[in-house]
Image (cartoon, rainbow, N blue to C red; front, side, top):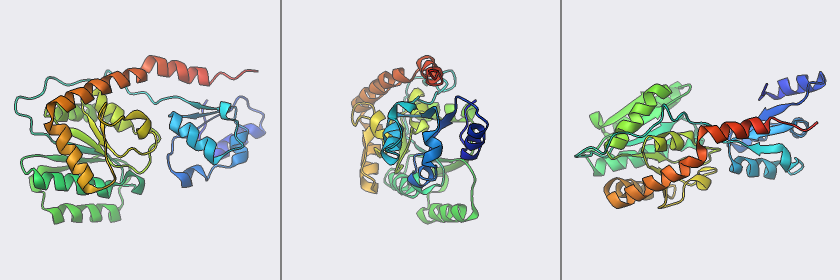
Length: 276
């Protein structure tokens, strides 16, 4: 079994259960630092979703043997997230953002970029797809932002879509010549970039955390500064420059070959093998 809760790990250790594996997926410093160094030090393996996560954890816990921290990429099902049909004859270039109303997702900047893009391109559409628990405070703030920008029917807010619903949406936006926007301040993986990419959708991203290891500017995506003008310019570029879009998508497809499920499953199973 794989355990993520420190209290469970302590109980198992006290009962002499071995080997012990501990998974860490968070990209946030305050959550990571809530871990007890003694608990982490007693784990046989600490499994993380990216090389960036391993570097980050080893930096925060310098006494932790680095060989115990193993990076195993998260798996995206290629039978669900797959490429779309050919580009539409008259693409209308919509933009989609996917995430939670968490500060580290920088959703306010994402909305500002998307709203500005739609204001400057009134024939286009924007999608905001959120997940997780919604608070009244976040909903009230977001609805006020939508009303203030007067986006009307050109903007859609969707919540808690399943994979079976997200994949067709990605494919439809890709077919219409659109792009994914990600403005996170930190990420341990950013699964939406992987999922959207497998559906033929290029990404415009802030190179935060593991995203910087995955996206190479101009080769398999576009990187932006965390400001509105940089984001809007990149969205217009990736949706209007057909040669750039084709080159980025070809590069993205090549990158995603390194994340095929078979090798990732083998890596994960290998990580769970502990000598002795």
